[in-house]
Structure formats: structure tokens, C-alpha cells
Length: 421
Ligand code: AMP
Ligand code: GLY
Image 1 (cartoon, rainbow, N blue to C red):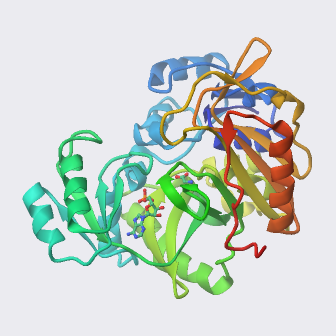
Image 2 (image 1 turned 60 degrees about the vertical axis):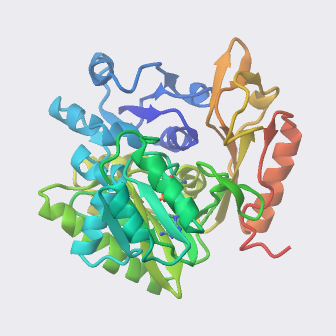
């Protein structure tokens, strides 16, 4: 089978790596890919906003299945477009991708279907927001209703911070805003929970714990994710049943009532408090870096599973998991998530190869002649699978030290909540 993966991050490199092990695979393209995917697939540099060009390439190369990694093409309707041209594609359609594209869309579903989530108010003007703010306890959360890679979320400690957030959003910091969301701050522990769905049935797709803050001990600015481990230490059978019954299934029911089906990965960002799950947000794709830490645990043919989803036959497949722990630490460009240098060489990176328990997934890299250059904030994902998080972390840190990239930094405390040393 000839397939194409859309995207260029660590998540996509992990997908390409896992899919390239499939016995069904004949050829794999990364559009546009990075310096890592280039070693195991054919990189094609196309603009993801130009659906017609993408289609022309897919048609010319007779690609049989397209897997969409990132949220933007999903929210922009790439699945609908390719579907209308009879191309098999894995990912949700535009109407349902709003689960990630609009936090207000998701909150309305939560309200209608009684899905546990933070108490909220949709505000349509500054005045409306200010009135509501004064009747709320602090901290509270103010959110722009856009796809802003986590950047449109303000955790506010006092009325001054909250007013700044409201003003910035209505001033258009994240694009034109007609409304915003104010919600209660939830205490608890976060967990990333995944399912894979074919529109008729679904299966759980493991759990992970992301580390979004840039600094050790979860301090400093929010990032796309500095590292993760899987499975989450919070999950157990009882909690999983609650998540499925109270959150996932009502959401799939809501989608059904819109005459839509969910095909793809669905990622629920949850807060767990006293063994009860609350939905913080939905993402309509795998997480990044969660994908990098979860996929090495899959012990089944991922291409068969994804293809089965596109044929509404997921129920005839079993997903097997390795009974191991997995950790991912992200090596970032110094300065991230603020300003950092571009096109900085990473020497010796090509000498690092993935093996049975160690995986190197590139993110913001490109190759130039024989060199690998860093072109993003999050640059390389180091993953290790083993019997313990503690061992995995030590192994990863050994690898990062061996690489010794002086323009990079990483968090050495990934998994600190589950490693007591
Ligand atoms: P989101 O983009 O909605 O996932 O928000 C980004 C991050 O902000 C989440 O991963 C949480 O850490 C935090 N966050 C968002 N909403 C809340 C909330 N209601 N209570 C506590 N933390 C939140
Ligand atoms: N790890 C967070 C995300 O993928 O949105």
C-alpha cells in the first residue's frame, strides 16, 4: 500500500517510523516531513494550505491512504476535500474538527450532554466579560476561541490579569474575536487520554502525561510539550470506565446527532480530581509529544489498524500493547518558547539510530547538504522503552549528553511525579 503522512513534527516522524514496519506498506511519503522522516520515507515539500496541489500529487503518485498528523489541515477541511475526490483519508472532517478548533463548540456539547468539565461562561463583549469576572473566584481561566496551539489560554490570578486577557483577546491578539470563554480553574492532575475511532466503533489508544511548562518542576512558560511518559500513572479500570461513559461516549453520541462520524485519533485532555475525570479540551489528532511516547508501545500493525478505521472495520482488529513503560524527552533550541536561532547545525545527529528500545524522532529539523539544521523550537525527541520510567529517563539523558548539542536544552525532570529519586 502506498501512503502519505501529512505534517513535519515529532508526531509525524513517530507515525512514519511505526507505519514503515507494516507488512502492507509498499511506499511512504512525508508531506513535507523533516530531516528524520527523510531517512525512512520520501519527503515532498508541498504547502499544506494548497489542497489542490496536495491532491494532484496524491493522484499522480497513486497514493492509496493519507494520514493527517496536525490539527490545522483537519480544522481547515483537508479530509472533506480529499474525501470529495475519493481519496482514502484518516482524520475527522471539518465540522467535527471544531472539537479542537473551537473551545466554545466543545463546551456547548459538554453542556448539552452533561459531560464533566470546568464551569464556564461564554462572553460576547468586554463588558459582558468584566461583569462575569467580578462574580468569579480566582484563579480563573480566560480562553480565546481559536486554534492557538495553547497560546490563547490565560490562567489568571487576579482581576488585573483577567482584564488584560480579555482585552488582548478582543483586541485581536489571536485573530478577530466575537466571543471568549471564561472558566473555573480546575485543581488536579492532568492526563492525556486517546482513542482511535472508525465512525462505528472505537478502541482506547493508551494514555500519557505531558509536561507543558518549559522549566523544571513545571515552571515558566507554556510550550507545545517538553516531554511525556506513557502510560499515565493515574489510569486504572475504574477511571477508564468513567472517562468512556461520562466523556467519550456522550461526545461520540453528540457527533452522531450531527449526522457525522468520527474517524481518526481523538485526544481528550483531562483533569483528574479525586478519581473523577473532567474534560479540559479535545484535540482531534494524536498529541505531540504523546504520540512519540505511545507509538513505540504498539505491538500490532498500525497501518492495518488505520486502514481498518478508514474501512469502518476497526472492530475486527485487536490492538496489542507492549507491557513496558515509555518516556520521551524533547531537546529544544535554547530560547524556546521565546526567540531562538534558526538553521543551527546539530553535529553527529545522524549517528544516532533508533533500535528496539531507543528512538530518535526529529521535529524542527531540515537537512542541508550533509548537515542537519535545527529550524524549530522543539527539535529532537529522544524516546526509551523499558521496565521503569526511572531507567528510561537515565538512558535518554545519556543519549542527549552523548549528542552534546550546545545550542539545545531539555528538562531533565520529565516524569518527576512518578520517579522518586
Ligand atoms: P488548553 O489549550 O485548553 O488545553 O489549555 C492549555 C493548558 O491550560 C491545559 O493543558 C491546562 O494545563 C491549562 N488549563 C486549561 N483550562 C484549565 C482549567 N479550566 N483549569 C485548570 N487548568 C486549565
Ligand atoms: N501535547 C499537547 C498537544 O499535542 O496538544
